[in-house]
Image (cartoon, rainbow, N blue to C red):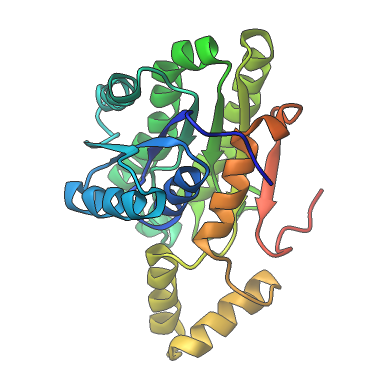
Length: 262
């Protein structure tokens, strides 16, 4: 399917690895010029090089910074606009939260969890909005299925994620008037470095080897396999395209059927 994305410009936060890198690569395959934002400049340069090899041209820009910092969001948006002269697509993806027993989590853990993922998405959305309004662009928020149900070991992440779903719906409401589409994707178990850390955590807790830990996680989710980062990239590219023009304020779970609630 031709998504007609050629020539558009995107900012992908958390673009140095995992889901963010896969999204950036898939957008590049569709002809999008991509600005990658994350803290690790060396990793950003690696992904930019991989995109150049995919697209056959230099369609990327990179901006290193910590989106916990209030000024970093505007800096990232400005970098994308300065590089490409416009902004059509914002993918909010940066952010990880600490997973642990609630009573071991500190005030700093909670502040950090909201600082990067929730406030980072809010600030980047605010900074990008005038440009997206001008281009009739779109936002795709990468959230997570932990928003769908409470989990004892995921109190920070679940709280942040459900707040982001509400934020997505609210901005979609504003976007109807302003001509900006806003949607969210909830990934389930995806084969990333973060999933690798989850495997290590389960192995330590239960004395499992790697394959046993993966089987345990799949059984816990009621699914048969782990998702691939590029599968999130494919869905993001579709949501960013005019093919999805009538999709507004939608939350799409891509988790192999793990989420069974309505």
